[in-house]
Length: 529
View (cartoon, rainbow, N blue to C red):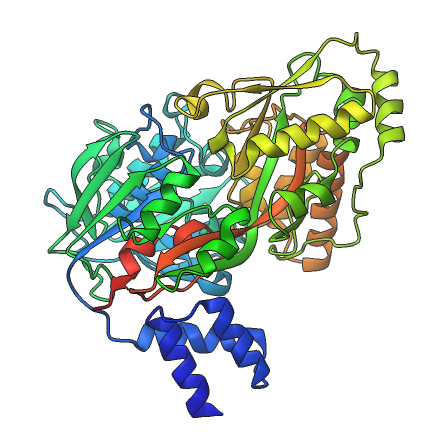
């Protein structure tokens, strides 16, 4: 059996079979899913990468207003570009393990109020010079500035003092935080020379590829950085990120071999692609979720009875089946699922209840005018269809929900985090504190529901420093219930990452932490002959 499993792992590593097929066949031979995943990861790391060629990714979510400033990355295209030219202090690898990147060691004091990061020596920038502890501090400080509009503000504002001494960065926190190292893996916190203060959009970092051409919302081309410090990565001579928002165009591109990997395979065409021996479908269940967001500070969504009416009028099971093709799970109006440590699975699952929705709607006193939900195809795969299904189930409960279709270009700058009610998605985060800090802390710049609750904030701070895991889980459960019952988040479903790659792509290891191997696919994969 050992030889057969090793052979299967080699086939999967070379791209000849999918991870899902490997796990299934390994299970038939008596191996658990966890053990199969471990064997596959080991085989992928041990495989001999093929050097050379051009590796291309077709990614949904690009627009002409995209910026190379890591602080502003809000959709998959800038995320993928930035994760290829830049690096963070640490990364989150398979199984949620912390991996050292710019930092080579992490330690803390006894009560987790102070964290020390030892900076790896000799990591070079694309334009010369090496990363210093001072650069790290300057980077973190820039993200604390309100003017930066950083998506990581909810994280870095919890740091009371930042100090650089030699190769050591010391962060002293306002309150204890046992998860602080994981927060430093946030994709906005790419280390930039002098913090990127003078030119945050330069696209110059320390990653394995350096930008040679960049047309926002269209194409970004990068070539391998000769002085990159990590010899285990960056096998292609050059890589490209192509912004392809249309699902049909993206699918045609991978079938024709014009791209080697793609994000967000539409569940409706999974079987079609699976029949193409040149294309492999990859799936990973994780913390990503598709949402409808109501701003609690904007009428009529400043009325919690109306918010509850809309939450009760979503048919979650229908959306999971028809939009995700069953490749996901129902959401419960808070952004946490079983992918997170300390998840409370005893919280009752919210179901579609037209009678209760109608009761809440009547109680809200709403005047009966159309409640407009703004949506664009790029909000998430099937977003328009999901909004229409939501409209139908809400209308059946007597709620006058209307859908307004918006163009993809400009959606993430003009609608998301601006409009009172719109569709969106979140990729999730490694730990609960980071997800809540980024999007639900009262002062977070990316609090896209404008949710503000003093008790919720108080619990968040307390949970960070609580080392008793049972007590910490209880705090997270209370936070989940507060958000579920009073927040502006409608979370109908958690999505699997469903992505496509060409069979000739080697080194692929699905990472539940994020799309395209948590943004590292271009850096870690190669093209087999």
